[in-house]
Length: 355
Image (cartoon, rainbow, N blue to C red; front, side, top):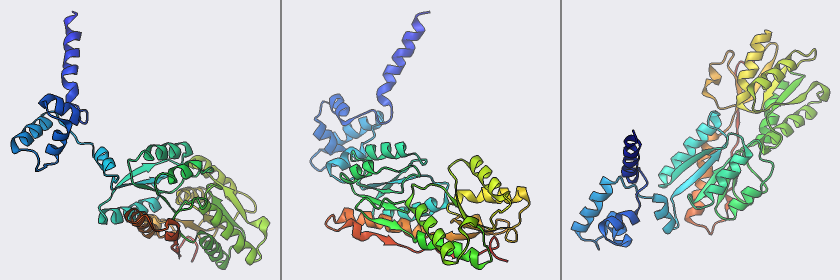
């Protein structure tokens, strides 16, 4: 009865060296009684190593499932040809489109991309950048979380590796910032509703820590003042990452006696809750309430009614942020802050705000 555990233990030990990635050049060298330099040169098909020795090395490497550490090699060359993309999520169509733009530029310049999701958590953002600062990548493209209210970790990373922001930026960091005209877009969305006859407009916010949201709110408030609307009739509603809570907030808002006749949603994820609440309460768009959302989702055209949107140039911003970083990586004498650009968004009017 005591034999079986011993046999199992021996089997595990016998197979452990064959686990993918566990075999190193040093192990290959010891087994073949060669130097690590010889092994390395044989694996890279160096002319300095004989054909016979190369065959011995490659055969053993295959038998033991040797996997080369590409990062270790790239660090010796001081280039990984890899850039990190740190974003809050990929469910939002903006980030999906931006990633397509980033990938197009990266591939065209023979760079790899590593995508990291922060899930809107500041501590995760800090941990990711701390890990990346060790040299696994040549630089990072970042869109900060809704919780990012401190920038020390961003300063620290930027002191070691180049960092470029897009969409959700940190103006305090002296680097390239790829943005869109959020203030003007907030103003334009609000003015569109005013021109359509709205007099009590609510703006649904998501985080007062994000520069893009504060700019959209500022544009909203400027339009209200410029068109002499009563401040008391318009409001900013603070939503968050919880769909159930947002549904409740919007439901309470739309059941007020003086409920809004117009809504501006600053982020795409609020769209579903707005439509569900209006359906539940029997409020029709655009007759009872007119709606504009910041969104790039393709489904905007098949919503019932179709959704009026502020479309951000997500793909173009993705291309621009990747170009800025790769340009610097190829020529570190350029000034990264000088690569900052603003690409305008567009208002696309559909049935949710217009008859």
